[in-house]
Amino acid sequence: MRNIKTLCMILVCLTATVGYAQEVLVEDGKIIIDASAIPHTRVKKARATDGTNTKRGTNNASNISSVVSDDKVYYKFELSQERFTGFWLFAVTRCINLDENGRGWRLPTYKEAALIYILWPELTKAGLTGVAGGSGTDAGGDGTTLPYVTYDDNGTIQRVDKRRTGNYYRCIRDLD
Image 1: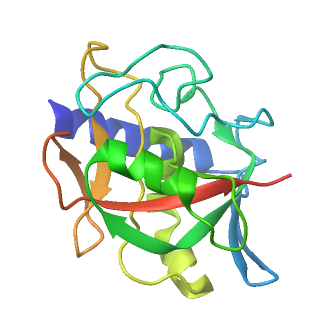
Image 2 (image 1 turned 90 degrees about the horizontal axis):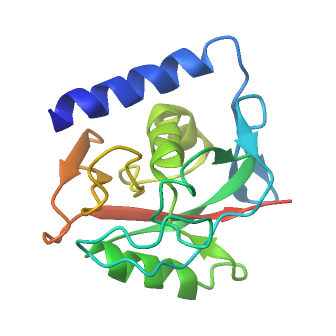
């Protein structure tokens, strides 16, 4: 069932991108996704969470793991060069504390992670290395667990239980 949900989400993203112009940009050495041509928000996303590795937490815009936060992608965001592994909550904190050319980093939402995955071939041409990384919340589910997206060494999307480690993450930063 999870694989079907993941496949459906990817198909929705692919369908939503047809006829639109999401762009991968390189500006002053920053690798950026401009998603302003698809339904987006200009309200900066939360960076922190009151959730845990197994609980989603409060469903409001101040919680990166909430369904509300995943409603729309941020219109323009930078991707970090760094890719790392660990538990989800560790990843949230690591992104908050990341100081790669300044602060303001966070984990991508589920929809943003799916967009990163879809645009990965263009992102590698722009200079990112390794696998896509990324993490995101799942707008579905029963609200008691926090599934997320990770990618294996071949760049294949995976759904992995929160209690496991060894999952790849990549931080993003909302741009103005």
